[in-house]
Image 1 (cartoon, rainbow, N blue to C red):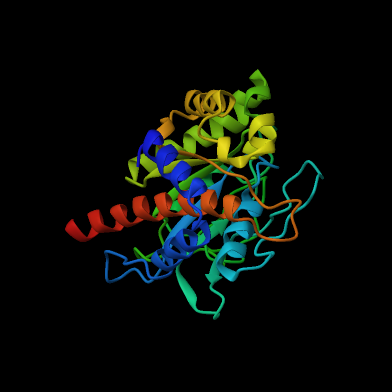
Image 2: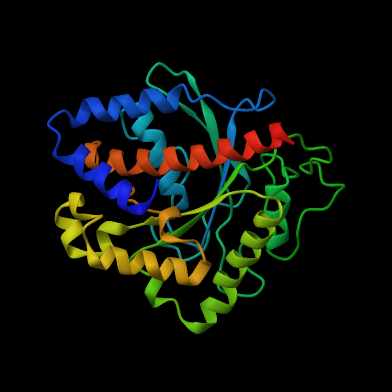
Length: 288
């Protein structure tokens, strides 16, 4: 769905007095998502991005929406400045009845400014191809070896990544200096190129939209009307080359203790787009 279409849909949902019913409808649709390929039990999403971009918070926020309460699906560090995620982990999601949902999101070590720091790009490429097993401990000094117990020598379509999600912080994207462009952004671009070679679809989830614009911070319904948010989306586009119709501005849960329908709708909209792109990818494999 194009950016204008998402804006119109979001505005309709937000002014509709039956917002909660609309949210439940989307949740039910995603809970029973019809995967196109019979060999794929769960669509596999890989999230990557700079340290502190909100990857783990995004995963936990998605988990919270489906469980109907706050959930810590991926551990989050409030401000160490280094990656809190050290192991490769594929998070499975459950609904209120504890039914397993038809998708998983793989969480990885954040990309850091230093040339040799954070997750090695070779490891991320291995993850794209399905070679990394859950539990693999990232080593910034070197990538996974074939003799490693967490190396999957014969990945199936069910092991490979079906959609690559770059998570970028909307409030900080414009502050990234030249050094960061040549390190973190360069790493992101390298991974994108490899994903493109594997025909894996790619999107950007732009987190912290509420911190990027004062109007949106006051009223989340302004997110697709905000010129500031549009500028931030264009900055994401210019840095990674992903067009704005594949960029989803969201707000993660980071201060709240209770769920909010406006936050949930944005998260669900992003997830729905991601799963559709992932499903298109596995359908192409079926056609091949």
